[in-house]
Image (cartoon, rainbow, N blue to C red):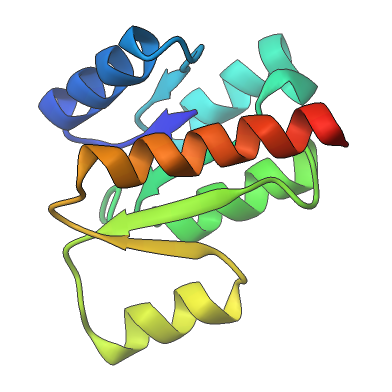
Length: 122
């Protein structure tokens, strides 16, 4: 799953993941994530989530929703350009991976491939 409020980033990440052979689900908000969960549920293998989604939603909230409703150990990476101590501490405290923008395509590919491999072995 890819969650980002920026349409260009969402579309490019979605198409990149699909080009690599991964079935990506795009979403822009918690509401869209919940809609996708109702359709896909346990089929979600991992999530790449932007930290700042809106004035009222953060990637941490989306990650919590995904882990509560899909899988408690779902691999989640928060993707952000925000390097403040508060954001980095919040991501670390939530036990999530952190990727700083701009993210190298290989880093994304490795994260998703690792999540897929882990899901197959589980």
